[in-house]
Every structure is written in structure tokens, then in C-alpha cells.
Length: 475
Figure 1 (cartoon, rainbow, N blue to C red):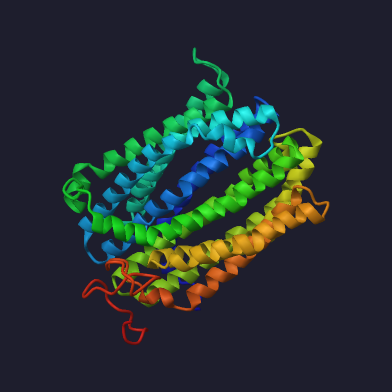
Figure 2: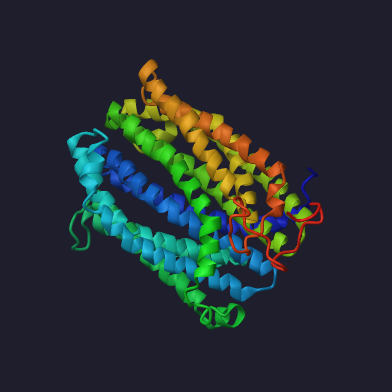
């Protein structure tokens, strides 16, 4: 590892800042939603987390797949094959449309599923209604992920930023209208927040599609010529993308479903405190995720150009930025933890519980930055299978047993699952760092046809990618 260079830091930030701004804007949307819903009641705040978490868990797998359009677009961009970048974006759009249609099957299953959590009746009714509205936004989110991945991969993150900002402004206005029943609209409460979010996704998708199909991108990337469904490209996208999607879904499952199921049994105050604390964790998580996505685009482009050592330098330069930011956020959470929770609730129990949860965030901040940095680097290289398997193993061997054990054998109540989550983040961060240092990612060719000869990447295709000069002979 060498010291960061000014030119490297500048390149990272030039690409990452618009992505970070997009993530920050998304965080603001979550804050606004939670703050407005909190004006309605504690039950609504409590119900928003389970309904939103389950909806996002269903979104995570297909969204993880289409976000890997970033990897394909970046490497195609580095190989000077711009039409390939657009072709993979189209496959992601088609995949998202199919996912949206498939989500209809979850509508009748919602009441029975949420009843399994054992939440209070008033919370259960709100959870089901909110979740059903959010279902309509899943396919839209997946298509947005494909187009955003395309713009990140070709190093035009500003387009995605405009789409996010437009959507979030729309969401704020529609929240005001539908949550509180203003301007002649019905007062829908939590359901209104879900409706506002779905409609804002429609606006965001429209903005991204408009730019994608514009004359400029048609001329530069042939976006109107490579629209045909292509099973070979879709197969490659699925092969690289499904592990990333599984990894994301598992992560959400651990932090969301397990916490909702376990924390919810202690009452709506515990659930509300967890929801509020998560909003603050997003302040640290989303910018780090933006750095991770920018790093995927940079690593992919340099691999496509055969500049392997430059890719490695960008990884460690990104790590420096991420650790500094996450460390500062840890200090912020520690010093102001009571005041931060008090912004959303005046209930003393909720404030105390939320402050304790923020202490967990303090403990795992640096490890979260470590994990997101190296996961972004691995994804940019197409090394997605091992991280998914490792995340699954940690979930079932560490996170779940510790969560359940803390409830069964301690008096920690809702804090127990959060301590288990802290251990989960620490192990994942160290594991992803180790994987990157093993250098297996140097031997993966994402453009080759997946086959049984290579169960971690794809088979080498003649001329498909320039081999790393630091790896001996090709596999």
C-alpha cells in the first residue's frame, strides 16, 4: 500500500461526490418521510420500518443484479466499447420490468406474513397497507438501478444525481399532500408516504430514460440501436449480478428482518427507536456506499484498460477517504446520541433506547467503511460470488445465533440484536479486506460466457480481456 496521491484523490472525489450527493439526497428523503410520519403517531413510525424493510429486502436481490450494470459499463467503457455499456443497461431495464410484474404475487400474502411478527394489531394493519403500496415501486427501483449503474460506469454520475434530486423534491411535495391530506387529497398517513415514494420513482425513471435516449447518448453509446433483448448478455449480467444481489438481500435480511422480528416483540417503543437510529446510520452508510459505487466504476474502467496497479492504488486511496469520514461520524454519534434521537421523539424510553443503539454504530463505523470499500473493489472486478457466500455464512453462523441468544439468555432486550449486528459488520469488513488481498479478482473475465469450468467468475474468452501482467499464466 502506498500513500494516497493528490491526482488519485481528485479522480475519486470527482466521480464519487455526485454519487455521494445522490445517496445523501436519498437519506434526506428517508429523514423527511420518517419526520412527517412521526407527526401522525408512534404506531406509524413503528410500522414504517417493518413494511419498508420487507419491501427493500424483496428489492435487494434484483436491484443488486442491475447495479452490476455499473461493472459491465465501466469495463466496456475502459475497453472502448460504448455500445456494450448501453446494451447491458437495456438488459437491466427489461429485467426490472419483469420483476415489477412478478411482485403482484406478494399482495395477497402480506397479511399472513406480517402477522408472523407478533406486532400489536394497530401496527400490523399499518404494516400491511404500507407494504402493499411499496410493492409497486420495486420494479421501478430495479430499472432505476440499471440506468444509474450505466451512468456511474461511464463516469457520468451527474445524470443520476439530477434524477435523484428531482425524485426527492417530488417525494417531499407528495408527502405533504398525501400524508396529511392537503390540497384536497385524502389523508392517508403512512400509506400516503408509500404512495409518494412510488410516484417519485416514476419521475426519477422518466428523467434517466430521457437522458439515456437523448440524441447525445444515441450518438455516443448507440442507446437507440442496442435495445434488443439479448439472452447472452442477460446471462452474463445474472451470473455476475445475482451473487451481489444475494449479498445485498442477506445484508438487509440480517439488519432488517431479524431486527424487526426480534426487536418488535419488545414493543413499539423499541421498534420506533430502532427505526430512528437507522435514519442516522444512513448518514454514514450512504456516502460510504457512494464511494463504494464510484470505486466499482473506477476499478472496472482500469481493469478494462489493463491498468491493474492503478486500480489497486485507487482502492487504497478510496479506503483512506472512507475511514476518515466514518471515523468522524462515529465521534458525532457518540457525542450527540441523545439529542439526535430527541429530534424525532420526546418519549424518554425511545430516546434512551435509540441512544444505546447509536453506541453500536459508533463501534462498527470503521469496519463498515472497510467492508464497503473492498466490496466495491471486488464488485468492480466482477468478484461477487465469494462475498455473497461469506455474507451468508456470517449471517447464519454469527448474526442469527448471537441475536437469538441475546434474547434468550440475557436481559439486553432490543440492544442484543444490535450488538450481534455490530459483530456481523466487523467480521464482514475484515473478510472482504482479506479476499481483496488474495488477488483472485485479477483472474475474472466478466465478458466470457459463464460455464462449469469456472464457478467463481467466467471462462476466459479469447481476446475478451487483457490479462494482468502480475498474474502468471491464465487459468
